[in-house]
Image (cartoon, rainbow, N blue to C red; front, top):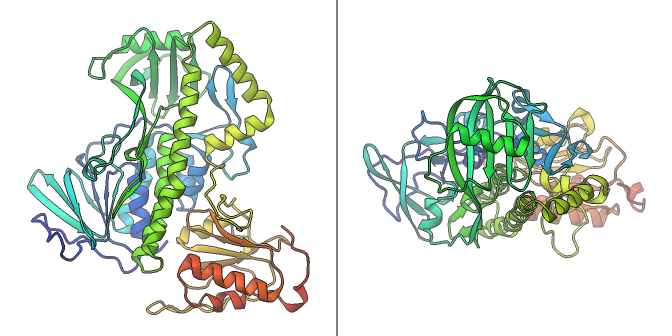
Length: 544
């Protein structure tokens, strides 16, 4: 991705005219993983981004997440960050859900057929570095007080140690967590309920090293998870049915030892607790992810139990879905209505995350006796019935997520695009790092005549099958294989459109309509015409 035409943050802390000129293009509130990925994407697309964060810069976020799933790693790969994160983490080839139920990510058709154990602060580190390099304006120690929106933009009011201030933008995205100020400011309810209380969280050292990098078990009376995250430290998350207390009740190392002995049979010689805290876990989701010019993503929009390790992953994928749409609208390449598809596509995914994590935690916490039998049966089904096992791992990993494609769409449309190997030695997710759509066509078809846009230098057409820019909206590439299907892949790695047509007229019309519709290129015909197959291929059966 390359930054261009960036609008810088011009707010000076003295307040902005509520209907005056914008200080920046987008305000992101909350510097967790979701906000950092979103802000970085927008800045790399050439937009001005201000990120407001309540915490001072020197205070790190309380990190509960420990797992990065395959689909999230693919999204990070599309930003050139996955390999670095993996190098500092711990890949696992199995993830225990409850009882003896284990999902096997090695069966995934992905560059990342594993579960990556790495603390949330490592994810934040690489995302923050990228955002700063892209030009995001960070404003730490800024407590948001409220907002005012009109037909032209949104003004966010905040307070710092120096006093009151405000900043105005075209859009605002609240990624400020379960207690979201932005959600409250737009008056959205957060319906749901507490699913589990008195969870205990601690960072400790161990005298005995567990057999696995991630150790988990549930007995019905307690559950515990222990995960290594480097430097000799282990994260412990656990629950004891017989030790229920309010969130503000003190928790200590003795309580952590007790619950791990109940759930795991050992406390592994825990000592030197760096900190211990208590919290509860809710299942909640807002009815709408958009109110006018204000959007919600991550825990501000949906929250659920830690079972399945879906929270951070779902939030990061929210950001990937929304960022390219905001960029397209703000750069005049799509109507504002495109932003409504964020609700259409991501709200059902959030609802599914609540259902999946809720089912896992309820099975894990079934009391002993009949509950133990139910857990054992469920574990056998997950482990032995291959269709169920495959569905479970695709759901947890995020690879099974697909978006509505509309009537008459190609069967591929709306589905995740695998990391296709392409002609010239490239692969799809390397090309997605440019932040553009990727058009993949059969090998040997003519090169692209670049579509010229005012103010954008025209790239020369390239020969052969190497990836080549059509303009700064679309990169074209060819299959390495003999496939005859043409695909248009969105910047977030989902298939926007596909065709098996080989007749020149039908193929040209389909390409013209798809490119124009999805990229806002009025002269999409220049791309489509140049990609029409040779006449001798007109009636050849399509292959995949």
